[in-house]
Amino acid sequence: MPKQKIIGRTELVDLPEWNFNDLEAKIDTGAYTSSLHCHDIEAFEKNGESWIKFFLLDPDHEAYNKQEIIMPVHDKREVKSSNGESELRYIVKTKVLFFKDPYIIEFSLTDRSAMKYPLLIGRKFLQKGPFLVDVTKENLNNLKK
Image (cartoon, rainbow, N blue to C red; front, side, top):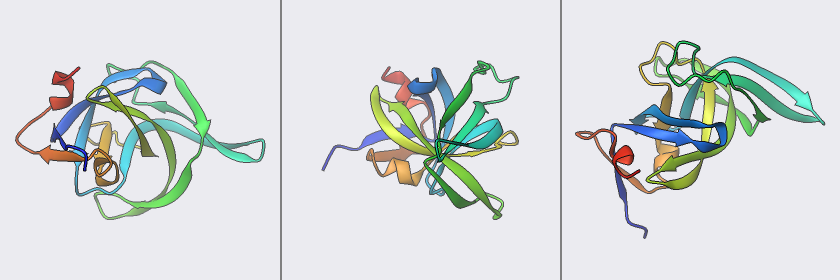
């Protein structure tokens, strides 16, 4: 069994395929799916396949770079939010860096503007690490960069 990596309750993560670094993420073992804050989400068909375009973060966020992200839809799923309501969300796959190691992660795209953290890392991803969450710590990933 691979050695577990300890991460804190919040982490700064990189999304290298989209040129975003040190984005604040809440580590949430209570959430199954990871989610990502974006706006202007628009689905479309391309060569008979489902694609999506969106902007990551809000224009007033310090890391916002006006980059429109266009990519294939990995899936569409019903996701129950923290308030208990279900919504149909688009799921995309990308790379995320933890401790300099790249991992493939699935993100549901949603409006998290009312939340403190633009990214939420759920247990489906955490089990891949495998990661152990120490809730007394923060940003352990950033210390290893």
